[in-house]
Amino acid sequence: MKILLKGGRVIDPAQNLDGQMDLLLENGKIAAIAEAVGSVPEDTRLLDLKGMILLPGLVDMHTHLREPGYEYKETIRSGSDAAAVGGFTSIACMPNTLPVNDNRTVTEYILKRAKECDTVHVYPVAAVSRNSEGKILAEFGDLKEAGAIAFSDDGKPVMNSILMRRALEYASSLDRIIISHCEDLNLSAGGLMNEGKISTELGLPGIPTLAEDVMVARDLLLAEFSGAALHIAHVSSAGAVRMIRDAKKRGVRVTAETTPHYFTLTDEAVTNFNTNTKVSPPLRSREDLQAVREGLRDGTLDAIVTDHAPHALTDKEVEFEYAANGISGLETALALSLTLVDDGLLTLSELVRKMSVNPAKILNIPKGTLRPGADADITVLNPGKTWVVDPSNWRSQGKNTPFFGWTLKGKVIMTLVQGRIVYQED
Image (cartoon, rainbow, N blue to C red; front, side, top):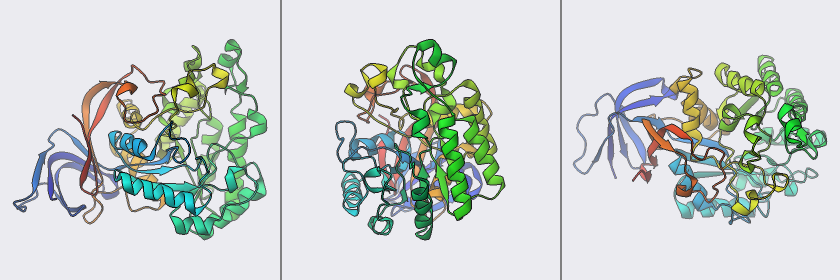
């Protein structure tokens, strides 16, 4: 099908474009982009998008799809549908499934199921170590051949330093990255929330920022020593931001991400023991939040991801101590991130770079642009539409969100993947 998207504001940082333009889509590709596309074939479908904003499809490089093994939390289909609603056309799914994605059979299964769903692009992230136990390296070469886009034991840190060094070196030889969950389990042991004034008032064991900072420092040193590419996941602390900034100045091959909840919420949100505020790493202090926002502003933090971690009600509707960590974030991430634009911290083009261009570049996938010849992966945003967060209407099976009832501004009204409309608002 040929589609002409007419009259929208097109923002593509990869081409330094920002203006009212037409996009012609043909055979799943961007066929033409111009201020006014001239003659088009008679069988072309015309969509008038005046007042809307057209973006290169968003890329979430940190998603948990749960399948195989935890389909009661999320499936590849429900997670892909949620991604489309949120404007994400490509997602990289973490390996903490059951069985763990530490072998080609699981990687191939994920790709097969994603192809059957035929919604968004799904890129499997394979485990660093067998069963993510941090003892023996997984077979990186075999996993890459099967389709793994990166390696991570996310949800569990690689505590063994020599194993992490070997992982960085091995991945680098295959032109793949290690995505590091930075947490010293000895320092975080028994903790339930950020260590500080609020944890003391609530009587909950705390997790110090030091637990994150120590491992960030170690992994930066290992990356610097080996010359390998390192990506640091879900940065939440001021110390981590500072060290990543310094490492980049020294030329270390490091990139880093954060999530909307780390620049939107602080540990004060835990005050009423809402288990939907329980995440790993935990929500931090106001000072940490400001450091994360500054890291986004100055480019220290390259990407904004969802860390979409869906859970069943039985995982969250329990005492805080026993609740699972995680927030279901695919359907709120863009709107929450748009607050950075409203606050003057980022331009809209800079935000798109962090949610599309940079993640695609870090993962080395051919996404994140509306350049002619590229896949027609497009997010259509209504920038002025306000809406209320109500997870009962979500496509994701995970309804666990601390943003229930929030009024947000900016809504995805259409998502196209390879020229197909995979989501359109009713």
